[in-house]
Amino acid sequence: MAVDPLGEAKGRLEEIQAEARRLQRQVEANSDEVLHQMLAALESARVAREQRARLEDLRAEALYLRMLHDLPIEDPAVPESRRADADRAWQELRALLQPVRPSAKWLEKIRELELSRSRGPVLTPEERAELERRLKDNVCPICVSYALDGSCTQEAFETCPIELFLGRLVALIQELGHRPWMEDYFERMYREICPGCQGRTGKDFCPPREDGDCSLFTYLPTVVRTIEDFLAERQAGPRA
Image 1 (tube, rainbow, N blue to C red):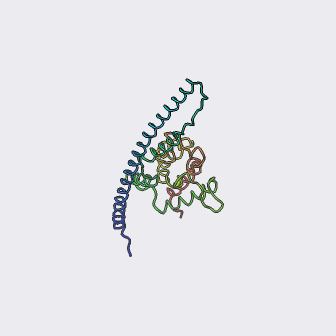
Image 2: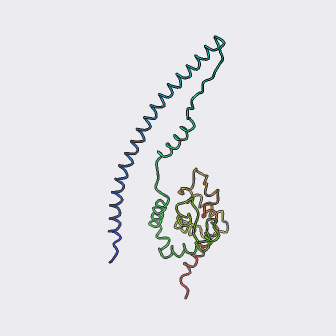
């Protein structure tokens, strides 16, 4: 039976819309519940503060009376306010309520599609599969995340950055041509690839890169050499 890509795409879009509507209702219900619980917690905090204020007045009155009549001074225990725990919970809650963006996987797919429409396809599916095989042969054995059974143990990214940004890497190297200085490739990577990566926690700070968990940064020279060799072979055409 012939495959109908357009029909499959329309069917998948209907599934996406149905699931999106369901998730939207659930998000709204959960958000309303969060707000309800926050308002209840706020009211409890007001009551607790009034009680603490009353307790402090009682402690002060007791101290005054003992000092006035030279009675032994006792210091009643003060209940914990749990402020540190509340601060941590509030910080986590604020983080959870921040806007969410799509995963790097889909952002990169959209980016590659935009590039392919403006410049033409960078790699055919067959070429991409062959290049991925070569990169795995050249990079994986020297990667710190490579296990003896051939599996990848890195957990910093959903997908290996080399695989995730492969289309953009090829386009970048095609534009640069062969450069004798690796700094040129690193500079373009920082400018064009790193800003769209989810590994960064700040404008210029990337924990996976600092910890040696970013395969693209750590093994960029090998990646560049592998892609350049592949592009040179493709340009030369099939051997007679």
